Amino acid sequence: MKKMAVCFTKRGREVIERLNYESKKRGLSGWEAFAYLKEEESCPGFTRVTTPVDAWAREHFGEGKALLFVGAAGIAVRALTNLPKDKLSDGPVLVADDRALFVIPILSGHAGGANKLAFQVAELLHAVPVITTSTDVNGAFSADVFAAENSLMIRNREGIRKVSVKALEGKPITLSIRNYPPEHPVDIVVADETDAECSLLLSPKPYTVGIGMKKNKNSEEAERFFLKTLEEAKITIGQVYAICTIDRKEDEEAIRALRDKYSIPVLSFDKELLMKAKGNFHGSAFVYDTVGADNVCERAAVLGSGSGGKLIVPKKAEDGMTIAIAKRM
Image 1 (tube, rainbow, N blue to C red):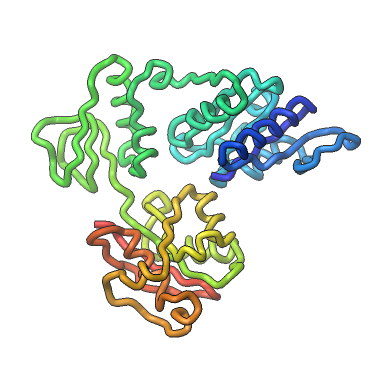
Image 2 (cartoon, rainbow, N blue to C red; image 1 turned 90 degrees about the vertical axis):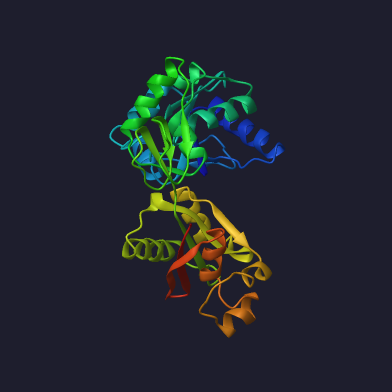
């Protein structure tokens, strides 16, 4: 997830600098730094912001990014007015004071991972994480965190509250992970479909998208082709388990942009492993001479779908990019 931090004072700038310094020491990704500072103040490594705070928030919120406001919580609240849409899809938002005493997740604590991120930031800054979600402060099971950490789709969101209420009452949560209904009613079933009596149905994300592309492919063009292919196949973003490609392409800006914006993991395979994929693929001598595998998108999609995966959308090509889709079985 791409992370953006914004400050409003010299002390706030120092907090972000310290956060990035400590992140680098531990091998963690840093925060892209933005600052609202006076013109005479130097801020190397920061992008100076001149637009209103709500414009900055509107530009960056909802694109698979985490936002950290270093300043008063009220600034963040006002800047985010009318932007949050859905707790299961909104990006995480945090606030830290400019003395780095406290770190507060204020939006998307569970599904977006703001609570988890707050603990990480607080540890790096030696601050106190201020967590307010009931299941966390009471040490209770959280269904939406469980779903997010295990790449599961929430099929009936009203079930989250039912499970949370039971967990907060200290009652055990029952879980069935089967392809057929359990014998007795349970709280959570993990399956594609079920007739079982349960409060919450979670389903594995069934699709892997294989991508091949020429070097330095334009990110916006790649995104349009990616979304168009999913739409034609009647597949939603939430159903995509992973983007799959050859190892030499995983750092392409266009692929990283899709990963960051839609929070979809990228799985990569070397050429030897791609050539061992089972199935009938649209081979290309040119592609083989270029990357060492005769097909990237179809082979990668099938490998990413695991044992028994099946290609359901064969290679589609458009302006230097290829896409194929496989279904996990």
